[in-house]
Length: 234
Image (cartoon, rainbow, N blue to C red; front, side):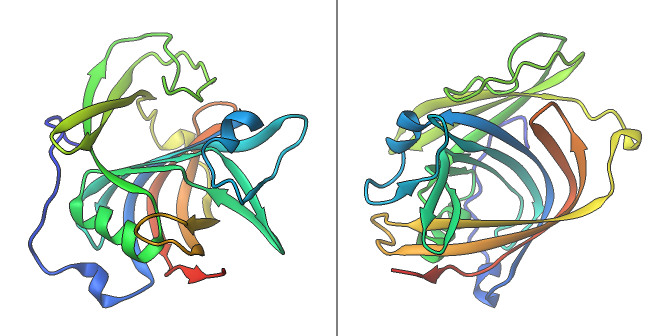
């Protein structure tokens, strides 16, 4: 994640053209949140049923830096307001996907049915603080790192920049905090956008080393993620 907050607009042949599964390598933070159901409902299509209990659903965010991918090096922030139910299964729903690569944005919109937007990711190192891990509207995690990196995310809309959030990440403490190699399957619903109006389902398989960063968040190092093409389900 560069200091300058540049946006990739590569004109070289796309690695996406080779077809799925598409391979991504890098590192990520995956943080879970309990989200109030009435807030989550405002961020998903009205015809989809929210999975909830006692007025809450399970949401979160996924922040990744890919060193190598079909679109080259880029950053990604995915906001998940909750879980939706479409018989016979339930999957996560992404209400916002921000990337600093025009190529990755085009692919997410056209092939995966994601609401992808181009954004600027700016990173700087800061001294100790007691700020929340993510100062987004849905964050409720308050770790106290000794040192951290501050990442600011600005969405691009025409010639304007829209502030989305600041995210504070504790510095990695070394391999002694790393857990075992694990595999995570992340199925999701997508689509119902102006670029892809049908309801779709896609999956991402992640192999990584897991490191807990708090009670409900974890860092993923040495990521090797495989994205599979989206399948139309309605």
